Picture 1 (cartoon, rainbow over the protein chains, first blue to last red):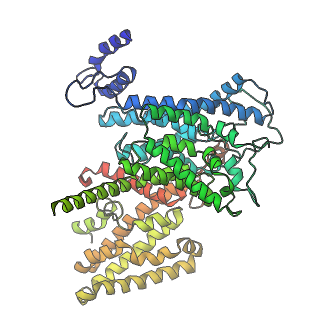
Picture 2: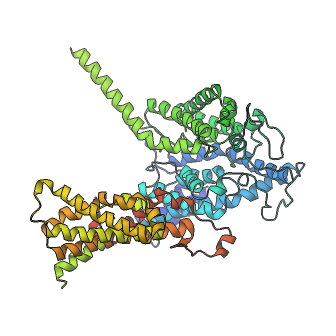
Picture 3: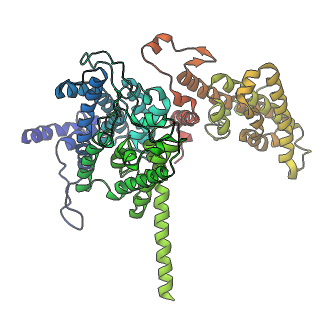
Length: 404
Length: 207
C-alpha cells in the first residue's frame, strides 16, 4: 500500500495542470481514488466525519451482487451439462464452463461502458465517475447467456450515451442504465432475448464442455412455459430435460434464466448485505415484494385459463423470473428511484404490482420486472412532487388552524 | 432571378432555419413515415409540392383575404392541394399511398404549412413565397430522408427496398435492429441530427 501511495504521489505532478500529461488528469484521479481512499474527510462542523463516497457505495453493491453472480456462473454450467446429458460433471467443470461463457460478456460490457465514460469525462474535463462499476456488472447478469457479445456492446454503448451521458453522467440519469441496455436488446433483437434458444448455453465455451444436446432438451424458462400453458389447472413447470421443478428449486435457482436472476436465495443474501450496510432503502425493497405478493395474490384468486401465468402461486411468482433481482438491485437504485420517504413506499409498491401485472396479463412479455422498473423510473419525480406538495399543504392547513 | 434576399429565403431552411431541427415543426410526420426510405421520400416531395403551391396561392390572394377568416382560407387552399396530391399518389403509386395512409391527409395539419403561410406568404410576393415554400419543403424532406435512410438501413438492412447489407454479414451473426423500426428511434435519430447540427452551429445553441 505504501509503495502504491509513493508511486502515485510521484506520478501526480505529471498529471496536474501544467504537467506533462495534464490531459489525462481525470483518468489519473479516477484511478487514484479507486485504488486508495481519498484523503478528504470533513473534520469539523456538523458533517458526518466519514470518507464515505459513491465509490464505497458502489463497492458494497458489487459485493452484494457476488452471491448471485457466483451462483449464476455455476448454474450456467449446471444447465449446460444437463442439456448435453452429462449431469454427473463435477462442480469444478460446471463452474469453469460458466465462467468461460460469461467472462467475455463482462469484459465487453465494462470495456464499452467505461471506455465511453472515460472519453466523455476527458472531453468535458470532468472527473471520472464510478457509476459504471455497478452497471457494467449488472448488464451481463440480466441478459440471457446466448446474447451475442456484439449486441451487448451496441446496447451498452447506446444506453450509456443516451440514458446517461446526455443527461449529465452519473447521478443525473432518469432511467436505470442497465435496464435501458436490456430494453434496447429486448426491443432491438427480440429473437435473442426470449424464447427457447436464449437462456441455456448449449455451445462449448472456448472449446470447453463440448457435447451433443439430448433429445429431451427444451430451453424454455419456467415463465416462458407458463405463458404458453393451455388448459385448466396450474401449469406444471419443467426443467430443461423435462423433470418437474418445485418452488424450492426456483428459490435455490437451479432453473434456466438470465445469469444473475435465477437464485432468489442468493439475491436475498445480497439484499441482506445491502440492508445491513444501509446502502439500499428497505422501504423500496420491501414494498416491491409487498406489491408483487399483493398483485400475484389477486391474480391467483381470479385465475383464469386465458391468462395461464395467473395460476402460479404468489410464492412462485416471486421466486421465478427477474422479480427478486429487480426488487433488490434495480428498484433500489437511489438515482432513478423516488427520494421522499413516503414516495419510496408508493414507488416500490407500484413496481411490484406492475411487474406481476405485465407478466400475467400481457401475453407478449413473459417477464415484466424490467418494464415495471423503467416505467416507474419515469414516474419517480412525479411521486416525489406529489408527496412534497401534500406535505406543504398539510403544514399550511395546520398553520392556519393554529393561527385562528 | 435570384437576388440575395431570394437566395436567403430559399437556402436558409436547409440548415440555419430548418423547419424540423431548428423550429421543431412537423415532428409528428417525421416520426410516423420514416420507418422506410421510400415513404419518407414521397412524403417529403408531397409536402414540398403542397407547401410551394399553397404559398403561391395564398400570396396571390393575400390582399383580398379578410384577416378574421384567414386561417379558414388557408385551410381550404391546403386541403384542396392535399386532396390532389392524395389522388395522384393513389393513382400512380398505390403501395406507397397505402404505407403513408392518413399521413398524406394530415399534411393539412402539418405545422410547417400553417407556419409558412402565416409567417411568409401573407406578407410577401408570389415568387418569393414559392421559393420559401420549396426551400422549407426541401429542408423538411432532407431530415425525413436522413432519418428514413438510417432507420431502413439499420432496421431492415435495405434501402428503397433493395438489400444493402450483404448476406455474408447475416451469416456471421449480424441482425437487424428491431428497435429502429419502432417510433421511439425516429425521435432519437432526429435528436442525434439536432445534436450534430447544434454542435456545428454554435450560434443556434440555447442555454
